[in-house]
Image (tube, rainbow over all chains, first blue to last red; front, side, top):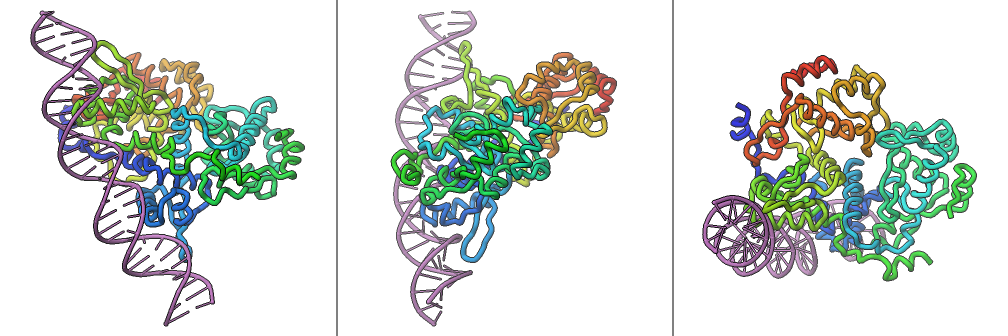
Length: 247
Length: 247
DNA sequence: GCTATGCTTCGGCGGCGGCCGAAGCATCAT
DNA sequence: ATGATGCTTCGGCCGCCGCCGAAGCATAGC
């Protein structure tokens, strides 16, 4: 009978750590969590930078990074005497994003960061902060350029035209596993745009000089590293192309 | 200037644990992870049951559960001299699901569980295992009863009719935050159906006796607790209603 | 009342693991 | 070659936390 088959030796040791716990443990250390959060900016960072971000000496950071690489969360790329680290996959970024969102909502602590990083920043590879929320609002409510589908959003013809005119590569956006979906914003507590479209919007606007990265405070502040600002050209482009008046 | 504002005291302590690490730490302990996995079955479990599942004495389990409740991952409901625990929200379940999926893919270790739990089981609130994968296959490939949209799946008219005929409440399924999306199967390494539709399918088929819960091995085996089996009526219903021949 | 059961709190033990400084390699610069 | 820089490995310290047994409450049943 079936039950005896389960009770027999074929079942896994119930006291085994389990893969979930192992992966969670990698994220559970404050220093490692700061490193991972920093890598959510999308760029590859050197071990030294990550050590400073995490607030530990290089020796400690090296150990942490080894474990993250070993655990498959981080990919490393040696170049000269530097070793560049980045998240291993978009899936890792997605897990960190959802886990971070849940954690932020669970922790009722008021958001301590100053307003600077709330204005506009990159979240993984797409636009977040007040600007990201305003864009989401503009594209979905009222204009109908994005219309809801079960798991996210799809673009109307008018929306495609408008977005393409701002330099966004819609074909590449469609090729992503998800075209457009919501990503909860830690600071605004409202949704902004993620998925392939979010990524293409951010890269396109950075490329054409509508957005520029702002220098952070050294590399201590995780959020500051990802800060971006709308340039005058970008402000004009958003008003004329999307009818979005970024205050 | 902006940078000085960040350098000033308004920024959070960069050495603070951070909510992400704190939440991850709650999932990082093997015993707690087993408890959380057990609660993914959807039912509320008593502290004693969870202690046995986790393989620790009640005293230890009590401590773990306190921390999970304190951390907002688990909700507790006292009734008589029992205390029933369940996951605090669907969002928690979603995070566990994605984190578990990532972990399973990262850990290349072969799946140790016997075949029993692989046949058919409930994953959170929807159908998984071989039956879940077969159903997913049937609904998407060939029939086109589910058609892909950016973030998941939508149902064709034919698909709605077919599913409604099996007792699925499509209105309730549509009301969910996600109608239908993929959930990676730990044992099969292939997608099965999650979202509102997945939930409604499982509840409907359990209600009409097409599926029945199987008794697990006491409550030691997490997967066994969630095992279900197709009844003869269910086998017939699936073949006649959906053209799905569940071997 | 008393006893049994479910659960929690308390105290103490032990180990995992994070931290650092020092030393060892590797790479780049002069 | 010689030194400087980036990074890793090694060794030792220390604290956190998971584990258990025992005792303390609460509820249910007699």
